[in-house]
Length: 174
Image (spheres, rainbow, N blue to C red):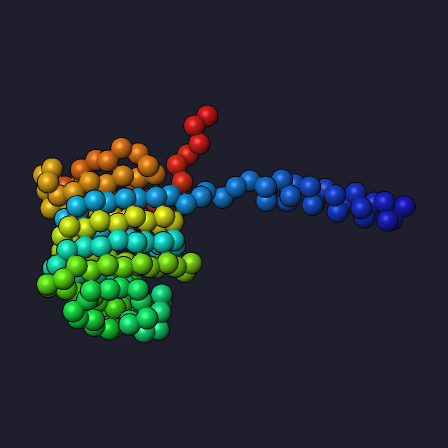
């Protein structure tokens, strides 16, 4: 009798937990930018980011991707600086800063850890990102500052004001 009662109690606990585990967590989203000029900031990003930018672009990557700035997959850089900075809460963080005044910067960054990546003073910015996180974007203004597309939607002009987006899978159409 005890064994039957124990099995019934166990079933009452396991069945609801199994049902909850079967519910999918939100998936990855995608973002594509072409011919962008301005500022793009990825916060707590997990995923893959592949792209390029024209000369004069300033790329800042938190060092949690690698212990050494040269181990990051950034190509065409003329200058790499490893710098200690404070985050928004005053906690120390280490960043790798890549700049190029004459050549194109190219990168391939893949991370499973939450990562912060900033593209400042970007010119001719083109990239594809797949993953999760928050993205803040501000174009230089007007219709000639590039285009963006979230989750395969139609391309739109970069926003003229700093705008924050959540990078995640689109909600299913019911």
